[in-house]
Length: 125
Image (tube, rainbow, N blue to C red; front, top):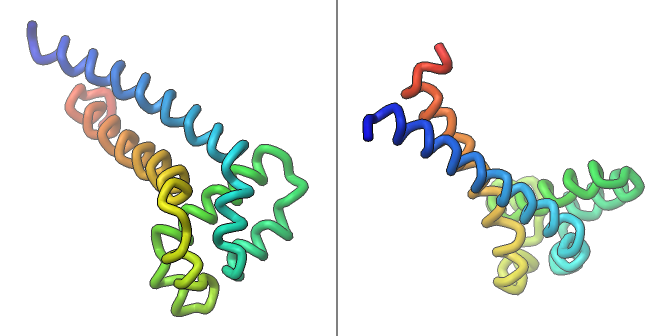
C-alpha cells in the first residue's frame, strides 16, 4: 500500500462520515429543534430566530438549529450582548446539548480534515 492509496481511501471515509453526520444533523433539526428551543426559551436570539424563520420550511429549521447551536457554543459572547440567558444554557438537559453541538462540531472538524487531505493529495493549489 502506498501513501496515495491510503490518502484516497481516507478521503472516501471522511466523505462517508460527513454524509452520515449531515443526515444526523438534518434529523436533529427536524425532530429535536422544538425541544432545544423550548429549553432555551428565555434567550432573545432564539425568540427572534423562531419569530423570523418559523415559516421558511427546511431552510428555516436549519437556520434555527444553527442559531441554537451557536447560542450553546458561544454562550459568554451572546450573554454579554444580552442575547442568551446563561441560566437556560446551564439548566438545559445534557442530551439536548449533545443533539445540538456534536453534529455541528463533527461536521466542522470533518470539513477541516478533508481540506487538509485535499491539500496533501495535491488536488487544491
